[in-house]
Length: 396
Image 1 (cartoon, rainbow, N blue to C red):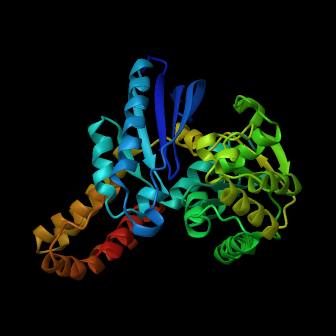
Image 2: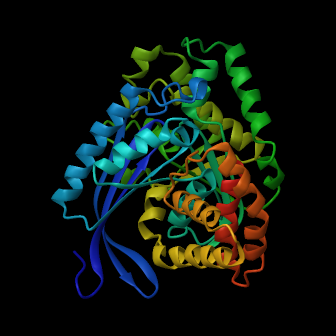
Image 3: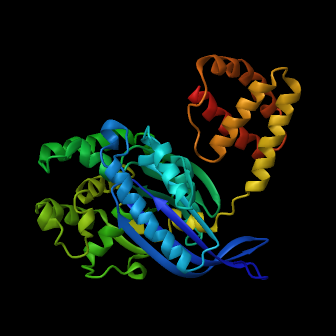
């Protein structure tokens, strides 16, 4: 419930490739945006939703079920705290899965609002979360299970943003599925990372501070400090050098899976992917000529918490574009189909819903729709509609 001063309780869920996280906070909404007043709950559970997605592009039934059970518990927690607004975003594994619509529907059936976001959106949320912490130029590096996001900028201005399909789970399944951490396999993984981040190396000579977020980065600190009980406050804003990361890697590689689960500071359920994640982090820092990285607990959950979704405004933009197109087109049915696509994309659930003949008709009218959008004077409105139109074209 929102009081007359704009205070209310908000919940955000991050459904990643490897883990599922919940953040509940008391926030204040005013004319300047959303401020976090009091952090109430932070939980993380390793659900391995993306198990096998890299190979078969499908979310396994058992992986979906593990995640749904976790989300049920999160929903119960949200209800307990009388959360007014509970939103979830799904990332790399869900993006890559051909059966993502099944999973997204199961989540919505729990009463949780969910959207499958792009890698760039994920990176933007990470940067937004850290804009509260840093007032200098930073490169936020988020090594997830399926992808890694890079966002460079200062304060609220983003200069470079990129999402690349390298992640701890993806690399583990690709190079270390048999628990074979030979020098040869490690070197193959390193070369794979280098090949994929060539675009990132373009910014290596710029001035910035490297900031690491999410499990791979935070685990390095908890292992370095030998935390028997994870302490978020002690992890936040701690630095670690490449040399120390290499010491962690040496420790991880020296033990088998069961032995790694016993390492102080390492979450046992993360033991199977921590080596690949650490290799990715070390390789990135070396390629960027950075000797150290600072680890932040302010990430995409924080960014999503303070992001104010201007849904009503954006719905109006879609409706206006639809009306303009409908007036200029003789085929109102096709205009309606395009509107359906826009609305599906807006909700994060675009699907291949139309027969080939209808698609051909839509293709003929896409150019006309594009002309209407490109002539839009409002830059933010134009960029928003162009992004959706591009998604539709890709799907067609």
